[in-house]
Length: 107
Image: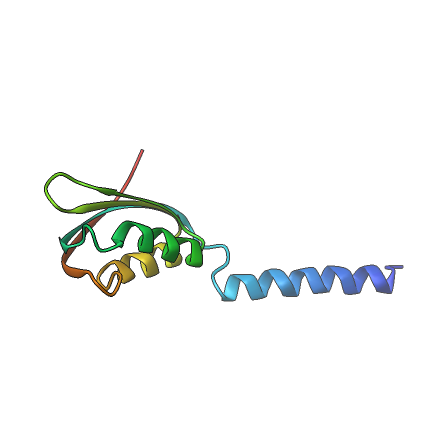
């Protein structure tokens, strides 16, 4: 005979697992690299990118490039990385983003 308390515990775990699947908790982990152009240096773009990444639970590094662009490397759940990538088009209030070019990092 199955212990009723144990049965409820197993059902609760299954229910919790199924709920996580529905909301995408077990999303695929990916790495992307983006190059952001426009007025993106000297406007707190890197710091704002780090703040937004932390808010989303994504690991990100933003670096100023000599040609005036910012390179953003990010890793995390695919849906959260996509949200950060979308945010790059907006950036912080003082930024003017002219373009964002992204590609998946493999290997």
